[in-house]
Length: 204
Image (cartoon, rainbow, N blue to C red; front, side, top):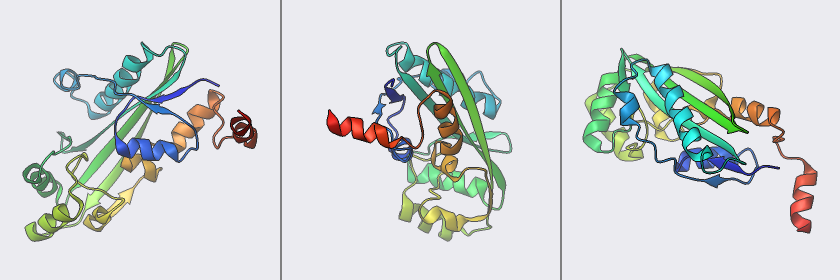
């Protein structure tokens, strides 16, 4: 079986991919995302392009492996929201999203044998009408500085929302595992792994 590589250093994507039960390696793609953000204005196209570029960058060095690249961004009223990095920016993002509906766009590309497959998940979220004090309290609880949109739904962030519409909860955290498992199966990466795989590893 080919080696599996996640073109990311994100701890969230690493933890998500571990759920599928396969051994894999994490490698930074070293892609300059800003150059694409300056020229691509459609949020879906941008997320797809960034996921593609990350997978492509790593595949050029590891041609015999299966590479997974992914990207996620939040979009509201035509404005892209990236990782806030600090308290001030997180507060501004949440205040902007307050009492509004926005989209969380998560896309991944899988490279294998020179070919690639791209899939995209779109989650729609409606934030409740919250006070500045509530927003500040939340940010101090979860410190969501490394999350697009400034919230962690797997933690206290779920309390911010009135409604969430998605086909895959894992996409919200950073990697749509349902669709990814389907793609890996199509590439003969059986998910979940077969019992034979674990027996063979034990014998080695």
